[in-house]
Amino acid sequence: MQHRARRPPTAFERTRSGTELGVYLWLHDVEAGTEWLLLDPAEASRRPGASAAAVSTDVTLTRAACAVGDELWLVELEGAGPRRVPTSCRVLAPVLDPTGTPVA
Image (tube, rainbow, N blue to C red; front, side, top):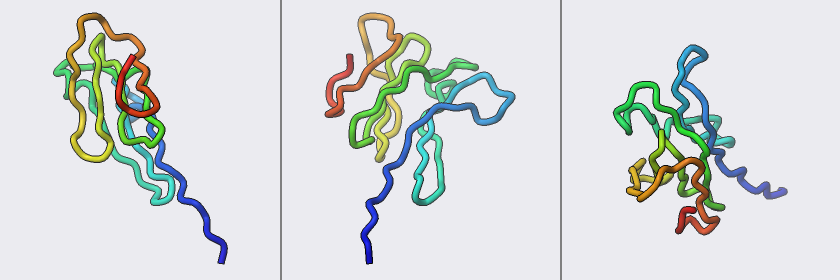
């Protein structure tokens, strides 16, 4: 029997439907064929029509950073969920360090 490595999940951005304006952050488990919503930017930021942009993940896909409006949001993909990270400047395209610790 040949052992096949498990394919890792994939984080991606898309709307819930083809008619919505907001872009959401999703996780797709390739092996199980399932996907689930990680971040609803409008709900998180309390701004109708808000979108997630410039998503960056760590190598092990346990954290994701993204911009919602001009704010930094961090999503723990295995539990804690999304949280806004206070910054002293506008956030346009956050980049999560591959180790998952600092965000530039």
